Length: 559
Image (tube, rainbow, N blue to C red; front, top):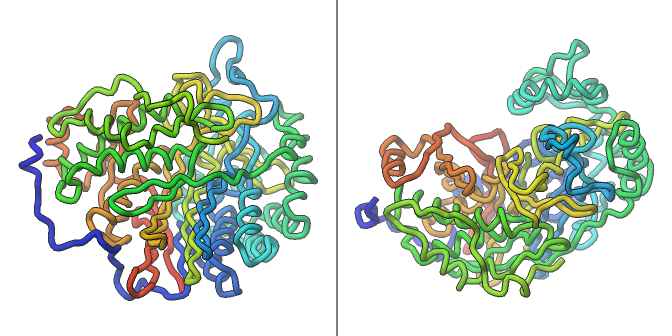
């Protein structure tokens, strides 16, 4: 793969300013982009009631827990990156937390690792952090009350909504697991045990009651009251480890945002326990010295893939909860990423036998299924929020009387160092299970600023591909001058070091796939993957241009 043969002159595009979408998708007051029209509508309604982009984001997040509950909800966690109207930046860690009784060998039963126990059932869940994070975001930067946003979500849960094709498909895929838990089956399945079909109305009375109780009693009802007590009692009766005391000790963390630069833009992301912020920044810094703007097809895929391999090798060894593991800041030091870039051969694949070793790795450390949404408003408030309960329907457990699907985020720990999780990611000691520790995540909510002014909110869903989806969207917009709609429609690829596979969309075409194979890549063609949401703002007119991923249902709108 000769780089010189792949250089292509582009039509006059500029990366000095982000291009806008067509006028029909521009809005002046605010905008929202989510995977569900009802969630987008809830966000816009919150802004029209006097709320800002933070209120809109939490309204959308609560609504997604109702209408997109197979991906996220009150039983899961989230990361929120906020750029407030006053120019301050906040990164809120609402990641789930291991119970106090958790241990590094909790899934080793009779000397053998039980790989299913971390994915399904009472041992799979961590302490949910989403609600604590919502509350902290509203307290710091919102204008509305939690009750103002929870009640509309409760009303929606109680009256029901027609499930979409994605929801129906996931019910079918997870049917055997959902049947194992009576309270789950009673809500999500027909009386005869068959799944709801697309278009059928899903009514969730218990979830509505939970949301109303939160509106009346606040987060204390959830973390230090009846909800925590119900979950603790169910866990004790069913072999789980979570107790009411675990809920009472949970705190959403206000962490320092990760701020790096790429081609004159400031990239603002989540610090650990998110791996997304570090590795989006790491890969961008690795490729910055290459003529990205002029590389197309196989040559461009090759360059980014080689950088992805190096980044994910570092992820597997170094990344974990910074309150427990030594996560080096040197991973995003330009000198270190420059040394990694020197390992990239533009003509052939290069083996990556192990992680790199950043400078001062022992001393300069970070302080102690999924859905993404983006919101922005004319006052200058911007939000990137990614939330999850991990794989489809999380642990599959709904504790009777709550309506809340509990996460299976314990599988995001290294259940045993070197053993792959549900996404075939491996981890080392830094991500081993420990009491009250937060598992590593790939969630990558990201904001982009120029000269202090916010221009872009982006993030994605899809396990480890979240990192690469976010990365590719950023480079398509910054390097290629694409609009958000164009960037989200562009074909994608992903490599996570282990396994040594290049997941790539067939839209690249057979010739590009052939060239990549000749360069040494093991390609795994796929029709499509991922779900990315994005909002940009025209730096001249100030108009917002939201966009949602064409691969999945969704809605991007504003007012």
